[in-house]
Length: 74
Image (tube, rainbow, N blue to C red; front, side, top):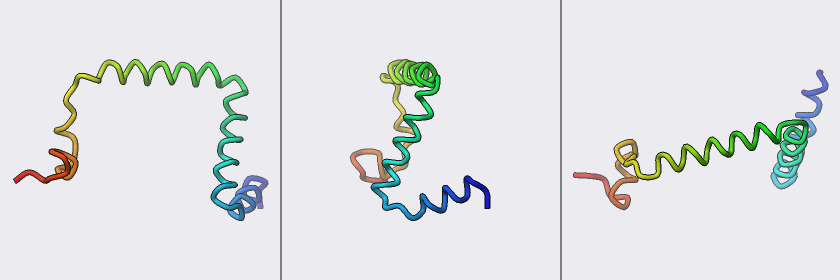
């Protein structure tokens, strides 16, 4: 068994709360190693994309159950 498989096996024994904490800690560790700049670039890109599309009508891409307040069109 590889080291990563052993780690995954141990992680599978954790509660869901502990798994969430593990994910947060691993993410923080991954981004603390020079990833902060990449994360900041990603956040700026997402903010720019969101601002550029805020006045667009995307409703034609929604399923009928999400249009018109949840009522399907007749």
